Length: 101
Image (cartoon, rainbow, N blue to C red; front, side):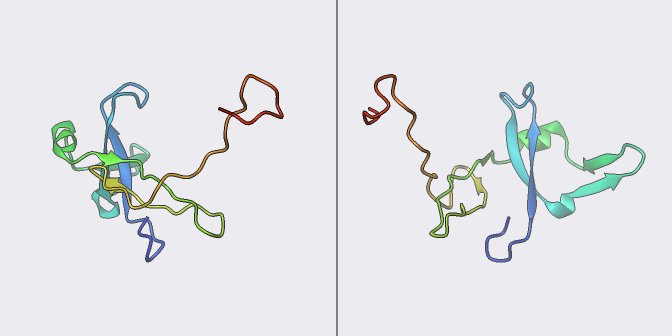
């Protein structure tokens, strides 16, 4: 999503891998997709080799906004636009009143 306009401007496509494991993810602009009514899905005019040659899209590191809502965006080649959200600490295996280590 483009953070300034709040519009979706690209979609992430996974090439290769099995059930998402080992896939090469790339971000393609929305206008690269065309609806194929016969196949009942979207198609692109890129080959698997084209997708493999593109820079890999990395899941952005999200930071929690002051209002509690996480920011969004995407990054190519690891150039994340924000920091990671803070996750609650997992309980330790000891007493529930003891702080987690």
